[in-house]
Image: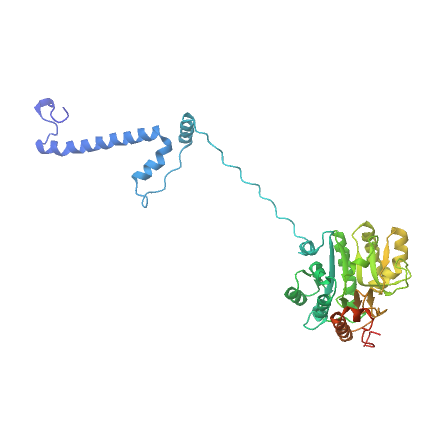
Length: 388
């Protein structure tokens, strides 16, 4: 036996008597017992590698235990063999979705989104263009909106399709306070916050910039009806635009035939369909800026209309001033008029004065009984500063 065997010479194990033997035997027993326990643990864990981390964590203090080593490749293989033996299907994690590169920024900013929200089902928008001078309270933009509110036949619903193009940050901020569809046309070289004198360098730059922007709208596949903000809207003008017209433009002077090139155009009220003919026409129109240097876009339209119609076969309709009227050739029949433009009138103050008088007359006209309205008794206040 481990504790009672005899050594050579009759001495007992320990060589120091009974006290030495009693101190060594418990120590040996403890070491042997711990070794056997460790072997058992390792045996159990090798039989169930999938539980190894759980068993160790259960035996250790979670707060004080050092991080556990990752399982070896051999242990992972053992784990897969055990799962296969248990007939367990291992489902691979799905591959991560490929990261898509962000879409390139549009050179037009949010223009396409603004157009999409404002357009009719046939991709038509109404547009006007303003700067800070025209957005101040009581200025032209207020009169413009008021004409829609006073108008007849549901003309106010057309505001849902109106895009206001602003030329400076202050005008854009003012637009957002009163309207849903605003676009800030960023330009360089000209301060558009103030009123521009007719035919000044900045005025010409503004008008040709407007013309180029209209070309962009066509290139994006939208039809547009452009209206100056000094046009009062009383009835829906679309019913007077021919379905066969590629371009329909208002007239300073209308001679009776809507397709005669002898009419004098005014670009302040202009409808254009997006098609190959109109895109070619606009390219030639822009080139005309340099062919006829110093002319504004309306004069250049008049100078190229004959050659472009012959070249492109484009259909140009000149709108009858009985319905699409202006101060140049005033319609006096309030029962027929749809829009009234403060053309042939220079200066913001003069336009404001006469247009306020126009709205006063229209307000009284719409408030009158139908018989009085039909009688023709209502007439514009004449003369004004410009209206006559």
